[in-house]
Image (cartoon, rainbow, N blue to C red; front, side):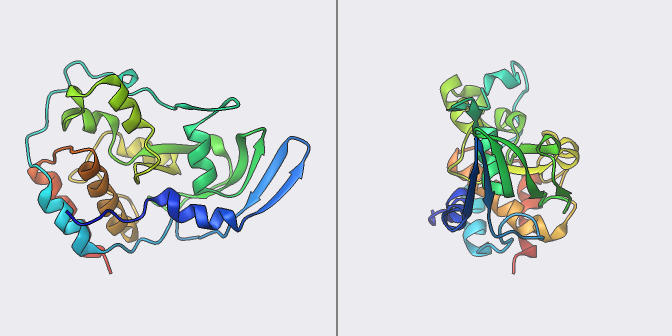
Amino acid sequence: MPPSPAPRWALRLGAALLASLTVAGCEVTVTEPGSDSGGISSTRNSGDARARLADLTVAEAGSMRGYRRDKFPHWRSTGDNCDVRDTVLTRDGTKVKFSGCNVVAGTWISVYDGDRLTDPAKVDIDHMVPLANAWRSGASSWTTDRREEFANDLDDPQLVAVSATANRSKGDQDPSTWKPERTEAWCQYAADWITVKARWKLTVTDKEKAALTDMLEKCR
């Protein structure tokens, strides 16, 4: 299998190292290079993504029997009263402000619909592959510890800050029944979905695979 592309957090880390930090009491302001396009570049190597997609196991969706969100413990603490949600908000936002290490302000461009958000309370952290979809495609047999790792995965493109509206519209749907409103995001979305499914050895349905193949046509 070809090597996975650099994870989203690693790409943004370089920008964060160039960020300017202003310290005033317990509040820290981080300014990063922003983008009005939403998230990182939507360009992916479609050949790599297609190769990973071809390697995924195709299977019927499993049962939802026994599923509960609390079987995927999230958001994990990162110390000092902060958690993985704060980490993603910091990574995906610009001009982010903190109280201690809790995110209290900033700007986020939702890659799914292009919405510009300035209130962190209106930002959702989306699981690229929803927890319920993961359950149906193999996670039902995992240990709780493994499901926790999946739900808090910062190494792969599994967590992304988006508008609450887009996230709740998506729910637990796969690409055969839900796609981002912005067609410009389809290449990135499909490549990231495939990366996560490949990394965690989750299955795809026939319709899901067909939809992903179609979305990769948007790659430049």
